[in-house]
Amino acid sequence: MTHPHTPPQKDAAGVNASLRPRCWTANGFLPFRLEVLTPVFVGSGEDLSPLEYVIREENGEYALHMVDSAAWLLAVQKPDVNTALCDGDMLLLRRLMAEYLNEKLYSLARLPIASPVLAKELQQRIRNVNSRSKAEIMPFARNPVTSTAILPGSSLKGAISTPIVDYLNKASAEKLRRENYRELMEKFFGPISNHAMQALKVADIAIPHEGTRIYAAREMSLKPEKTATPKTPCEALTPSVPPVAGGLPLYGNLRLDCRSSSPAVELPGQSLLLWNHIAKLCNAFYRERFRSEWEKFYSLGHFSAVRKALAPVRERIENLGAQEVLLRVGRYSHVESVTITNNKPQCRMGFGTTRTLADGLLPFGWVIVHMCRKKEYIEGVASVEQNIITTRQERLQARAGHEAALRAEMEQQRQKAAAISAAQEQREAEERQRAQEAAQREAELSSLSPMERTIAELAFPEATEIQSSALFGKLDGMTPELQIQAAEALKAYWSRIGKWQGKQLSPKQTKKVKKIKEILGE
Image 1 (cartoon, rainbow, N blue to C red):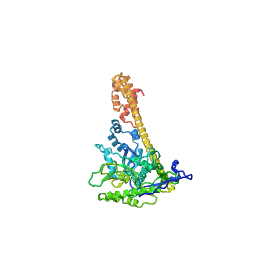
Image 2: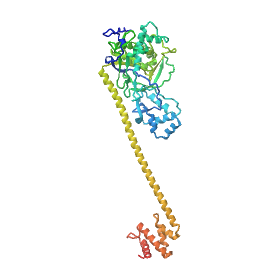
Image 3: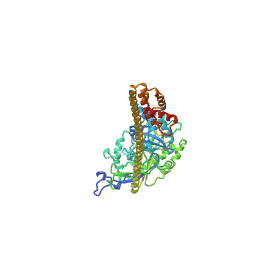
Image 4: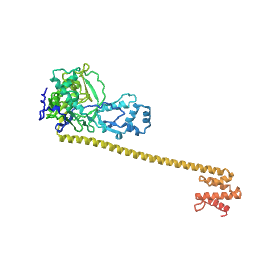
């Protein structure tokens, strides 16, 4: 399908618009709502290791938490963690992190895992002491400040550019080859310093909280018996249509150069591609490729589950509205969707014999750009931004609350430890005091005669009634001087224990008291 270029545009003075600098005005501002038909994966270029995430089961579902592992390592008080860190044992450290890390304190983002099988598989890889699996995840592109996912505008622009190249190449008499690629691209779009596609600007799209999920990237071949190539699980946009719809609508905008009378991509020769022309090119290009992929792969018997899951998407694509543009975006879009019609893919033989599917059910990358009113765009963007802000605040508040509770618990433990320490110090001081007193008494007793020592020991706190009875029995054999000392010691002891006076004294004790009084002359 081809569409005529709009003829060159001139201003009132008859000057070609291409001679004026480009400008992007409100007239060329085109807001849209992005409808995600199947999971879309645009990677960050780096893999996420098990030292950067933990998996938790929450209310019967699984979620991956991207975590601040550096902050956790600074705060954790676990001897085995410190040992693993000092030894450089990363396999042990990631198992300990999966066991100990509190995701409520250290989570940077929560990503639902669509498949429980995948979640358990990743957990097993990490927990298995004999496993050397990297257990890595390919994360989505992210804002480095807020850690929220973003769909780069460059990915959408690339998907829009391919049908334009296809259209221009079909209109050209020359076949696009590797050896003439640069020459033809300059012919189609002009020199790189003034490339025609500079006229199109596509803004990055902010993704709300839990607008992405973790999916297994599973390969399926035309031949059911062929062994699939293992692929790393990835974080992808959640579809906004059944069977796995979820998340807030996504909003973005594109801008077209307005130096001519209409917003457009101006090609060499001053011909214009207006947005409605570009939209028709995209719909024709990608719808043809979806149909071809359906017939080649999804009509086969071993793709029956995929065919069933993809049926609502197929119906949606076959019934595009007037303001809707079909695109295929991101990784796993497959060679047919990124290659122009008259250019054989420059890769090894046998290309296009497999599909990589999210959890083995849906192909990656299909989206619809639905042009919308500016009011809807502004409200939609505000809703997404508020979602991001609210989620971040809730996470920070939850973290602050848990940190406060942790500080209170630590303070309680500190106070308890301080009380135990103070009590221990008191006991030790008392023991030292008793030891000093015992040493002092022993020093004093060592200079006494045996009888004087017996008398003196009755004054000690640990003296017993047996000692008092024994001393009383020796009174008659003492010298008068020792009798007086013994009588004084017995009086003091019996007074201390309540057996010196009172009606409760037994007759026997009364006689003893009487004798002591006689010795003391009382």
